[in-house]
Structures are given as C-alpha cells and as structure tokens.
Length: 258
Image (cartoon, rainbow, N blue to C red; front, top):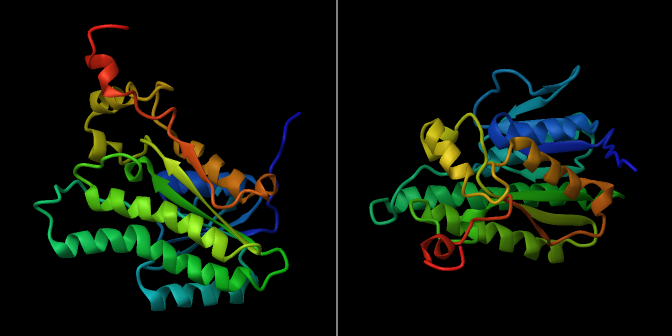
C-alpha cells in the first residue's frame, strides 16, 4: 500500500534551500504540501516551484545572530509558527589544512557547525511553545565519518554536527525532535567543482556501491521522512544516504578473493 506524506499547512524552513541539495529538499517538502521558506545570503533569482506552488525566500546570513533573529521574528509574524527546520546551508572549498589560515578554518566551522546551532536555538524557542512541537533535520556528510583530506575543517564540523543533533535530541525532547541526514556524493550543478569534468563525475559514481551519485531528491526524501508523522518516534538518529558508502580500497588492492 502506498504511503503518502502530507504536510499541508505545515511551515518548513530550509537553509540554503535555493540550489543543489537545498533545492531538492525544498521540492520534496513542496510536493508534500508544506509551505516552504528558504534562506540564503543572497536574494533568490526565482522561487523553487512544484506545480503552481513556490517557495518564499528570506535573505539571511545564517552566521549572523542578529540576521537570524530578525528572520525568525518575521516568520512567526507572517505565519504564526514554524513546524520544521532543515539545516542544509554549508560547504567548503578544497584547501589542504597546512596551507589554510586560522581565519579560513574558523569560517568553515562557523558555517557548518555554529550556524546550524544558532538556527536550531531559534527554531526550538518557537517550537517548544507549540502544542505539536516541531522537528529539526541537520544535513551532514560522510566527510564527518571518514578521513576528509582537503576539507579537514569541514569534515570535523560535520562530525560535530551529528553529535550536536544527538545532544539536542535529548535536551529538547519531547517537544522537538532532532535528527541528521548523512549525505554521500551528490550530483548537482556544482559537481564539477568537486569531481572535475563528466569523466571525473562518472569515475566517482563508480566508487558508490549503488552505481550512481545521489540526486538532490534522494536527500530531500530522507529529510521529508524524518520530518513526517512516519518518524514521530525517531529522534537523535543519523540516516545514511550514501548509496552503500565507499568500497574499501583493500578489496581492489588485494591479489586474492576478487
């Protein structure tokens, strides 16, 4: 029997929800009937749409406490509530740890760990006053669960974000559920920045047991599940969306058991 997730009349905020993985998350929640609010430092070129429904955008630097407070005040003033937050904004350029400056490392940790904590604090302050509470989903990365050369500060921040989610799930229960989605390589419009040309993207896809990179919709559907009534007893969990992970290098290096 098919199960349909209906989040009609639910208010959802997706940070960094205007492109790439964030756009996939926004589309998943729109398709489920939710009112989807996005935020990013820059104005959105156009709303994300599903059918005749589109997102509402807020320009906000999620690292700025004053800007975040103002955004939440406006959301509550306009909609009266906020039911779900997906902390998706983040990322990092390639930079070897020995060559990167302390300021660079601090900014990466600020964006990928401290900003989601700031957003979560404001979301909790609203949700805990609501009869139905709310849910928060952290979008994290396999970089936080294995060595992350070239993005060491990013990997460390994402590892911290998974731990943060489990800690907040205990602190804020039972009104607010907090979970994380651990994401593997995703094919987006920016894949070339991480994997190179089409041959590079294809080569990386071959390292994934499922034989392809994730699509933004795969991440969006996972986040939607964690926010939905199907997951009402799921909190403090990490949901792996990585296509089976990475094939261990020793299997290909070994001269036996192929």
